[in-house]
Amino acid sequence: MNKTKTCAAFILPLCAATLLSCSRTPEGILPEKKMKETLVDMQLAEEMINMDASTFQTNEEKTALYRSVFRKHGVTEAEYDSSLVWYGRNLETYMRIYRQALAEVQVRIDALGDVAPESVSESNGDSLDVWVFRRYRELSPRMLSNMMVFDIRPGTPYSSGSTFVFGLNVWGITPQMTQPVEVRLHAVSDDTTYTVARPVRENGYYEMTLKTDPVKRTQRVYGYVRLDGRQEAYRKIYLDRLGLTKYRYGSPAVSE
Image: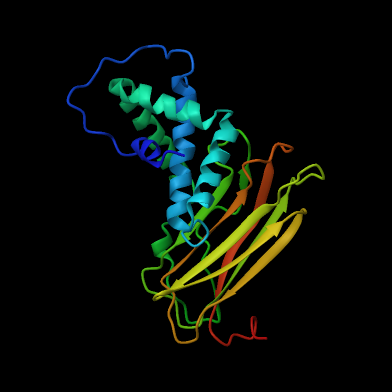
């Protein structure tokens, strides 16, 4: 992918003059509605890369994610690049679509939960429920992204050696589905990031346990549940019983 053109979708270019926009796009250029929807998912892809740099370390990995957006919307990379050039010459139209796309991205982010993650504080007990988002989600081809993202940054770092257990119930997976649901959990302690990941290929309840260093406090816990963008043989995937529990170091509940 031409990275320069892709970045132009998110950083408005400086131009000597603003050209008048057209009410209709010419042949080979994405219509306004499809362009906006594609921009939304491209922005979400950028957010995913920024949040999970350890997974998307190479240009090949990043390009594969961008191409999954193209497959979802049924457009080619060439069509997208040509559309960026055309909309760049019709800035009034481009800026209107761009603002709409940013608004939809913000709605998606705001919908992650009703409680600010920073409001979760440490407790004196062995365990603490730190999940501040809704317990039920859906992943659907009609949604802006086949991904549920969460990010928790407590006002005061969690105690040294904390263990985090992420749980979820998955249903809606069919035998025809060839690509698994990917679940990933990260914890950041000082200059170290701990990671666990697993594929989910069958319906059922799953838990993932992530232990941190006994002498380091945790400043951030984040992750995602993602359905591969190439998946076509499904209608909806349902997630419920979502939860994230923090255990103190040495807690009997997580001791080996």
